[in-house]
Length: 115
View: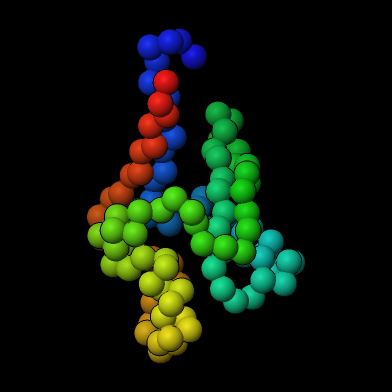
């Protein structure tokens, strides 16, 4: 890193759940099943490497910690905290949510690192 080089972390909401992303989703689901996690939220982070391989770097039965609720609501029509609350308080509303979200708008979260 050079002294004047901007450092950041970026999160992109996947707009189109293509074959490549479906494979990652299915692998994470197999991990959840193996751990006995059958209900509730889960969070995983993957990184695509230069050689196009995908590496799982974070995984757990929890909500994501740094998502922007307003951004998610604008992008997919709901946010994960509200969906979790609906799962307990309004199960019928929760069950109407799609298995995979449908993107209405694109969203990127950019996290800048202070020098």
